Length: 395
Image 1: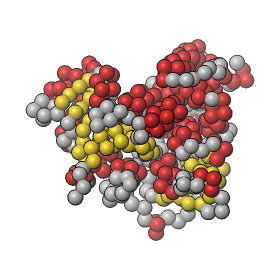
Image 2 (image 1 turned 180 degrees about the vertical axis):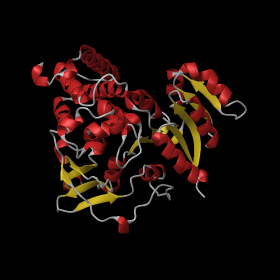
Image 3 (image 1 turned 30 degrees about the horizontal axis):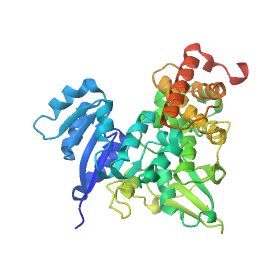
Image 4 (image 1 turned 60 degrees about the horizontal axis):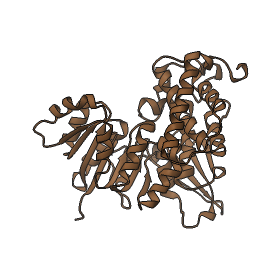
């Protein structure tokens, strides 16, 4: 019997953390949990650390340290808190680290994990979107393997033959269309928070659910795929597939199209990555082909979902634009979730921000973080001034 894999989970209390814990719990002898982290959910982090017999539990909010320490009292699990502690424990040696911290907050921990982990499972796409060249370069330098957890990128990972890249015609990312695919354009502007969070196929966290509703999730996936698979963006396409059963496809030069199918359950791609290069039986849902009456595909609608054209625009413009796109989106989505702007204002905020930010050279982590802060400030200014309530042509 092989030695259990040492694993760290950063972002252990979110939806990806839940699915990862389910896979590990179903194969307790296959994994040796080292570090779990969360931002501020002390109770859930403590329970999860005990359930998985973790060695360390790190809470990002340093004000939560005493509460976490008390919750873990007598368990033998070491508690730590704060940003510095997170970056320190991110370097804990492991066979694989699951990166599921939401947003750009996951970038520095991801880079830190490369100092101690052989493989990085990426579930948070934002660091690759905003810092793809640096993340990929650092992985190559340290001989770290990056493995995609997103169902679409994991599907590509499973069917893409990178031995002969010239034979790849294109990769095709599928998108469900989210909860508003069939809505009239005028009705979209006033969609409520509850309606936007109600994804028809997937159970996800709040931020990614809103991204799915605007299709920004797919836009960010286009940029992520560019870096993950080292393909030019003119070889990356998006198609609407409302059933979310085919998770993505690769078309080769001979006309063959290979796809990966599965139920809409994150346990499947997570099990695939955690067991790589082998496979594990997943505790998630199974796809019964007898229950499928049809598979539908539709051309994406750029008027309804302008986020996707923004992604290609940002890739053409340069890394500064991808950083700005991601930052503006995070701020706008946060404002919508907090009731400050309407659903229809999200894309206006991002469009105005992108048009306001001039090209800047990005060469290292400091310049990435500086641009990220600047783009957030610009977007917050747009929201505070109410500019997002106007169309771009009115400004």
